[in-house]
Length: 471
Image 1 (cartoon, rainbow, N blue to C red):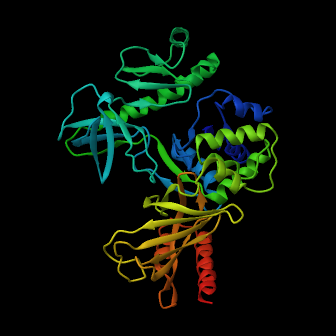
Image 2: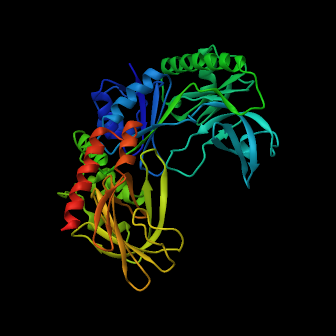
Image 3: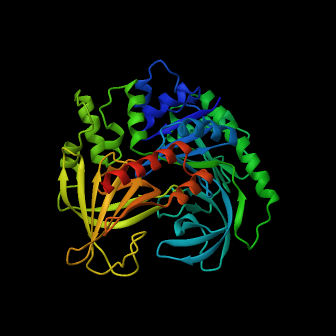
C-alpha cells in the first residue's frame, strides 16, 4: 500500500482522491485530520510526498520507488484534461558529479551534464568553489519546469523523510532536530537504530508528534534507503565529467488548469464547505487564499465563481500592469510581456490588455512586419478556451488578428495563465481566415504531451472560432 503525505491548498481534495483510489494518507496536518475524523491519517513515513508549488499552480510529487510514483501519478493524471504531468530530469535527492560553470553573487551555477544545471549556494558547501571546480552534490530543491529558477543543490547528501531525514557525512547519531532536540536525542538512543556509518539523524517537525513505534519504523525505512544509496555511491567513481550518479527518488510536476481546479472543488465539497472557485481563488495569492478561508468559515454562499468580487478585491484593476504567462505542453513557460489593463467587465468575466510592441521580425503566421509603435490589444475571458489579439500599426491600421487556442484562461491578480495548445486561428488584414499549426498539436500528441481528448477539444474550438470570425 502506497502511503502519501500531502501539503498545500489542494490537500483536502487530494486526500479525498487518494483515499478513494485506495492509497493511504499519512502525516496529515491538523486541519486535514479534523476534516477526516474517521480516517487514520497519523504520523508514519510516506512513500511519496505531494507539495503545492510555490506559485500555487500545481504540485510537486516525489516518490521513493517506481511503483509508488506510478500509483500517485495515476491518481493525479486522472484529473481533468487540463492537468499536465511531467517527470523531472533533476529529481529531489538525486546525486550528481558536477562542474562549476561560473559563479554568481551568492553561489555557483553547476553543469550537471546532458544540458542540466543547478544552483549551489555558497552556504551549502564547506569549501570555496570557483570556475571549473568539480564536486559531488545532491539536489535539495527541484524546480518546476515552468519556473526560471534552477534546482538548488547542496554538498550534503540526504535521505529525506516526513518524520526524520538522514544526512551523510555526520559523525553524530543525531545530526539535529526541527524541534526539541534533547527529547528526540533520548528517543533515538532508546531506539538504537541501525543507521549506516557516517550518517546522522535529523528529526523533522512531524517526528515530534509521532509515537515511539512510528519513529522506530521511520528510522528503519530511512536506514534501508540510505544503505541502498551508499552502495550505489560506493560503486560510482567520482570523475571530471558531469553526470548523474544516483537517483533514488522520482520527482513529477503537475500543472493544474481551471477545469482541474473546479474538479478539485467538487472533491473537496464532499468533505467540507467549499465555495465555487475555491482553488481558483486560492491559487491567486496568499491574501486571496486567506479570504476564501474566512468567507467559508462565515458560511458565505455564492452560485458561481465571483469574478467581479475577486478582481475588485485582489486585482487586476484597470490601469494595472499584468503579465501574460504562455505555458507550453512540454512544461516550459514563456512570458509574452506585460501590458496595461484597459478595461474590465465583471459581468463577462473579461479583461482587455494593451501592449506596445517593439520592432523587428514578423508576427507569427500573419506574415506582416512587426514595427515599433505597433499595439497588441488582447481580450481575456475567464474560462475561455481561446482569446483574440488584434495587432495594429502606430496609426491604427489593423495588421491582423491572432486567435490563440489554449486551456481555459485564468485571470490572476498578477498574470493571465493558460497552456497554449499550438493550433490557432488567424484572421488576416484582408479578412482571410485560416487554422494554423495543426501539425504541431499532433506532434505533441505523438510525444505524449497532449492527450487525444485535449487535442480533439483544441481542434473543435479552432474550427468553431474559424466559423465565427469568418462570418
